[in-house]
Picture 1 (cartoon, one colour):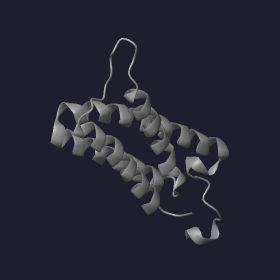
Picture 2 (cartoon, rainbow, N blue to C red):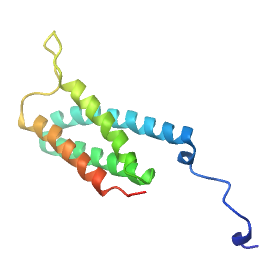
Picture 3 (cartoon, helix red, strand yellow):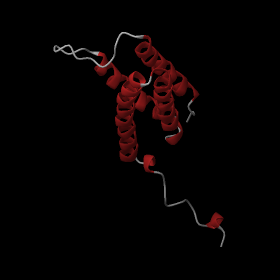
Picture 4 (cartoon, rainbow, N blue to C red):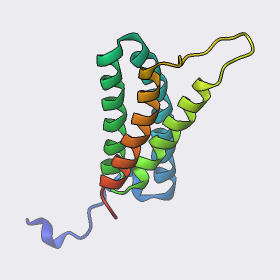
Amino acid sequence: MSSAGRGPNPVQPLWRSPAGLFAAYAGLLVLGAVVGLAGALVQGAWFPGGLLLALAGAAGLFLGGAYALRGRGGAVAPVTGWIVAVILLTTSRPEGDFLFSAGLGSYLFLFGGMAVAVICATLGPRR
């Protein structure tokens, strides 16, 4: 029997329902924060290679989120989590602890990540 006479497919992606879409966006937001934290640690550990690895991981998440949710909103959610995590990590504490130094690698990670975010949100699929 052919599938043409059966009607619509009963198995739909999770993000077709409003609750599923909210869960997907919330998951991407948290995943963006985790990638921002991991990238902040990796870029400082191995300077040239770690920086490229951190930016490639962020780009993969941003563009992957856009293609997974079939829209630019899928890139905006992890970008938001990434930016919030990275900005919170740049603030120094009263004890004098901080994660980012005032070096070239840190600035390249911050501004390069923002540039990657804009590029991935622009290149993401449109609805």
